Length: 100
Image (cartoon, rainbow, N blue to C red; front, top):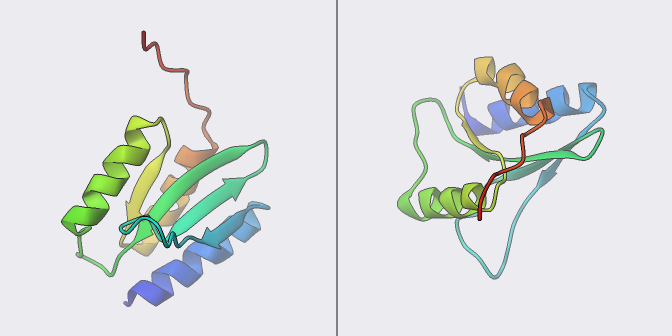
């Protein structure tokens, strides 16, 4: 299985939930996740797509951490079986952070 196949399945599954799975590139910041997932009711998450068994590069790990530190949901998907769970996580509301 190739990364492209997993990504295509993710896009299709997102559309089936009436959402958008937008390709994300940022000329001013390297290492951003591949996709922004937008679901009904203002729910959003970032997804880094990988071929089975591959892991994010250090630059991607740093970017993922930055986004998570800002309170965003960020996932790495390297398997078709993860798609439903990731979309479920994005659809589940987050509790507000109790930061000072």
